[in-house]
Image 1 (cartoon, rainbow, N blue to C red):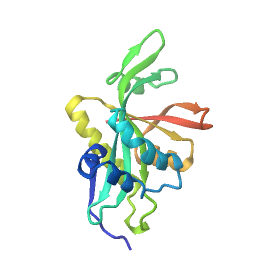
Image 2: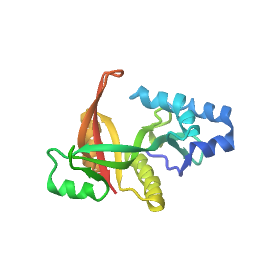
Image 3: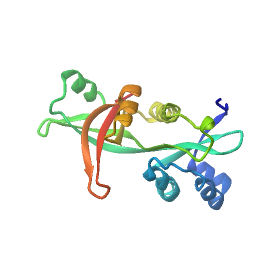
Amino acid sequence: MSITSTMQVINILDVLEYDGEENLKNRLATFSCPKNTEIDSFLKLNALNFAKRKLSITYLIFDENDGEILGYFTLAHKALEIKGDNMSNTARRRLSAHARLDVDSNSFTASAFLLAQIGKNYSIDKGKRITGNELIGFANDIMADIQHRIGGGIIYLDCEDKEHLKNFYIIQNHYKIFGERYSHTENVRYLQMIRFF
């Protein structure tokens, strides 16, 4: 049986202002994502510092009934280069509406919204957990608001090359793979994906 809750999305800097740093850190310490330790450690170790430095902004999703953190996502902006090789004419036309083509290198350069992190809290009861689609829906709402204010038309993310993640981003949320990168420090291959607003 699912327990219904009212969810509220709050910028981590607003939580900091309201709660103070020590209380905020105590709240963040209750978050747990054992399926992906990078998600867990980013929130606890980097999210606040990155927000203070304006490198990225983390949004926390709270259960309004008890104040528990249900999940979070982190947004930033990124200069993005996309190679035009092996791209269909339709994709090139669509991309050219939001990016500049360098004819010499046959690559597009765009300013994109970066969905840098997304994760849900597994330390709470299963019936209260937020879904991945709810999380990405909240992130899309924030990005749509920003787009309305300043423009932009591309969302970018990296994800590990795992079937359940590809299904989530490609099938359920309409992202397209345009490249890949390899992290030598993490020893992980990441798929690079974009989606248009």
